[in-house]
Length: 110
Image 1 (tube, rainbow, N blue to C red):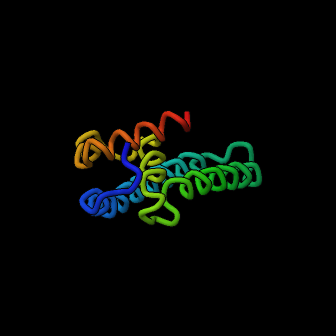
Image 2 (cartoon, rainbow, N blue to C red):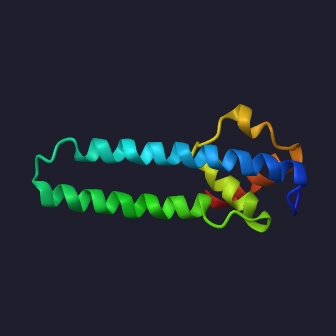
Image 3 (tube, rainbow, N blue to C red):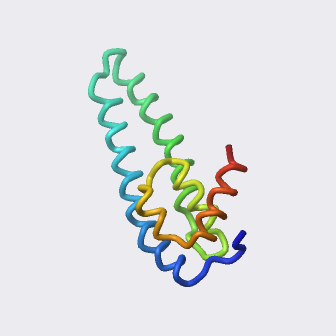
């Protein structure tokens, strides 16, 4: 299992990190639109639901995207993978060693 991210994997990570972040934000915006499209219970209840949603998604975002450094790239990638934010083709751009490390970390998180 790789302990340190190789330069080639780091370059892939830096490129795909932004793509995954955009996908995450799109997902959250769509959830917000859905949550606020009908405030049948009243606007205050709708606001409270929206606030809880944003707080929850902000924590998820932090686990997958905050502080992208070489030392924690595999942890971020495991979280990104678990959230389904990269395609199989994108994940295949990483070396076999990197993919194995990501899978091991992801299995620990489950």
